[in-house]
Length: 448
Image (cartoon, rainbow, N blue to C red):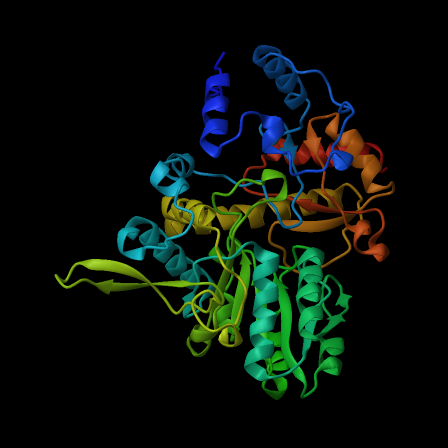
């Protein structure tokens, strides 16, 4: 068994106390009044040896239902995807995982090149002119997009589709509250944005329209029809998008999107209990100087060699606070690197093939549920998710599924009361025909 090296010894402690000029730990904390010091015993287990502790923690960890031993049909924004083995190899190199941020760009060429490649591939996938070096996550990125639109248009109203991820909408509302921006939600009709309701909400004081593509239900929003509505009165068109889906779908840039935001989690980033992940942010050329975070540019040194520099930083750390367009002070450099490595390993053909498998397998599952007699409420094309109506509470069904080695789908009723007993089923390229058939069989046993 591997044992951790613990460098703290009694001698080390005495040397440190001597260095700061005190004789004991009690003397070190003598400025803390006796009246506020804790005198009792902590309600925790007695200390164990490392060997005993490792056994206990291993036993607890073995109770987890992980993705290695269970077939997962849970998506709703975080997905179980294929990760090329090279991803872990590259991001585990110390020069990358210790490089928090390239504060000295002239000696951070490897980190900067990795970020530059990430920006380039995101720009290509989204069909936009430029992308930044990454953001915290998809929800943050989308909220930043809305704030940029409000600053650019000098308007204080944002319209967001009810088919946008509920958590992203919550983040947007939190951002908007501090900026005194009104957020108006447009209802959903047959699983996509209600275009008539959207038209009715449009006015001259609208800064932006926000939709998701594919949306939270896995449905493909008709961006071609939404774009002219969104651009009414010089408002901006913002699209939150799953980047993997763009390997097969027409990119938002081709439909006139002003800003495309999202999460790069599908590319080489594990589900990791929901985070941390990696937001991306892509814009048209006219908005490039308003992009939050940082951008890496390509240049040449005085000897004509290819090099990389930080450029166009809109952070308040670098410019006057009143000129800053965002308070985002960092990025997800390591996760952006993971996404870059995954996209590079897959290549253009691999990303397309992976996206197509998500479409094909999800549609196979959707058809299988229909043939089994399930109500699949929404029509229209899907990417890798769809809703299914059950005759029992989703929580109850999922508890039964986990006993069979299946992680069930998301309970839509928890965020959409009108969709009580509806499960959002995610089917990625990793799910096999046998796993899909087993899910339908298990759910069908209690459905008929």
